[in-house]
Length: 328
Image (cartoon, rainbow, N blue to C red; front, side, top):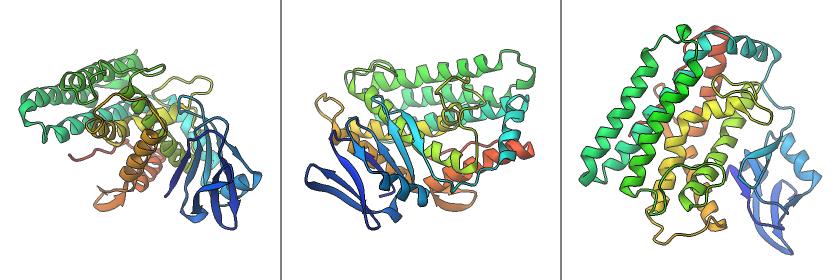
């Protein structure tokens, strides 16, 4: 177990020796070595934890996240064991104002579109009866990805709106196909963020919140200012750079897991603790899976960290950012 989420009201998180312990009243529900943890997320109100937990996590570089009712991190506690340096942040702010940052923003959305295509073709292997429809939408999305690659962004005045417009058009086709083929259940008709009432959108939103914690940790390790992004606009309480970098991982890490889960849920349910735990375990499984990265087979969590350092190199050395693409 590398990432622990506490999702039950009234539980207490403490430390006994070198182990983190979760209790519910007088009953111990979980006990795990601190050495196995990378992060702990408090994902339910009414959960309490001791100051010893904060100190133990800080001493070992384990991040402690406090999530709101939407599953979004509202606070993150970390120790002083980080690789960040002030020079990177100076370079980051200068890079954001440069025209080169537009190519990085476009590259991140390019990665997202290519990975959306990979998800469609991945499930297309098991739905041969819909092969033509799936390939048509996959090619439609690929064409938008090519536009992102070919455009000279330094000459585009409204470049941010144009990139987001391309992303939106591709997403509309992607989610519409999911709805038409019933991959996300009978109640899914469109993608809904905040305030979603159907199970599939709730699962997607919860999954994206879990993914954000991985991206947050990787960028924080690299020393970035998380609230200064290249694509998403700066806004109070919005970790723009986290939202930027997680775009390319959303389809493969979250969408694919939710589609798989929905294929096994016969009746509509509410997003309860067992489903949250199931999705959390599935995402942890993906992050622990080894994929090829620059000729080596590495855990995806390691790849995400290396991509964060690669983004730092892009900003410092003025190199072209290359998103990570999954092979279906």
